[in-house]
Length: 284
Length: 293
Image 1: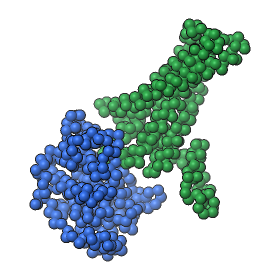
Image 2 (image 1 turned 90 degrees about the vertical axis):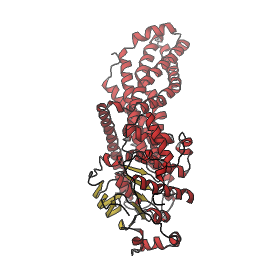
Image 3 (image 1 turned 180 degrees about the vertical axis):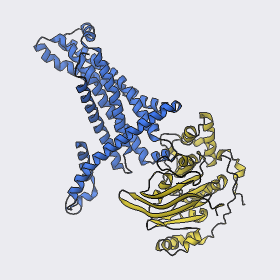
Image 4 (image 1 turned 90 degrees about the horizontal axis):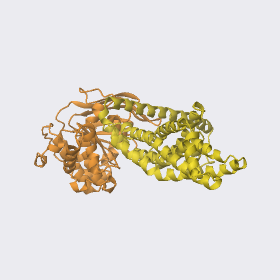
């Protein structure tokens, strides 16, 4: 459960159109500070578009979107404040294909946090190490990496900005189960260490069950329910019943839901300065 | 804009739905009206987009003037190398051949009238004022214009542009502006280089076909070629460079998430780049009609 009930993103009455088609209508969604929110929905229901709205990459036709409320009302045309305090991992990673792994991570540090070349390199290397990418891969170009490594590097790049909110678009899509599990564990660890708010789009029921405090279900162009997973499962909506009680879903939920106590460390430490020993699960 | 209708026709032919139903274009009463409408609206959208891009680049320049430490010099120098240094060979070759061709063909006419010595005037003005700038621009539009469009297009397909934006880094400042600056700087230099080889080719051919000696050619050239032509050539170069870079970036940024659109974008970029260069050239010709300046 989130430690506070302070909203960090508020979407009210949002309507979005893409190429003349209505994607969202009257969509309301609140993201709480410190939670992991999973977004699910059938394909083509605008999950990624919802993420892009929160990032300011897409503009709604109608409605309001406030990000980091209290700190600032998000102005989509500028959006700098929010952008620098949020990190994003796109579905296919979107690493800069012309830059090495190291430069991908160091770019943001140099450009936006005015690190000099040497300290950006050092910080980028320790960020990469944190997400499980050894220094021997630092000089590689993105096309030389496996799918799981691309996701990890993209995660390191997102963390380079010391974000408050982390957006993940299908973090486990296209990965083998082993790699998917380790990414899920990594996200869980990072969330606890860094006091992050995580918003993720996912198809993967395992990920939802293991990770998310709340699940928002997109159907009929709006969020039909956003609640802890057991409440969502009980919600009477044809899509939800089909999604969670299909054959595959029953297998995924056969295992008990993990106990998931969220114990936070002080959030003031930047990710690359945290000692590895402090990164162990705090509840074990 | 003829190239659009051409490329549209290409898309229709490649469209798998085109063969279905009752005709090459899906039948319907409103279809002609829709396609007429989009044929009008699309170019207007393109123009609006292009003006928007130009405006953003100008705003970037203003922003950078206020904050001079963050000029993207690394990107500029990389672009100078790719668009300029790597184009030296091909522009030299084409310039040289153009010089040879002009000199050779004019030799025939000039000899008939006994005007052999005037080949210097003719070549000097034609190459320095018109052909050098134009040939260099056509080559750069084909070489660098297409590669800039493809590069930005792939970055668009790969979500890299969105990744930059989401990090709060302006991609016009980071990707578009450096290319505009680099081409504005490189294009005049390439023109001097092309002129040099054009005149060299012309001089060699004039000696062979008309018996005009090298020393006479070199002695007469500065006398018959007012220096103003050089300046006009260089001014053309800078504006051609800006136009080519902006057009290429415009089409690169418009690429949608499919490979078809990357292909049409690259084609449109080169065709529009070359067309716009000729339009700008015509404007220069109208503004500065006198070659004795």
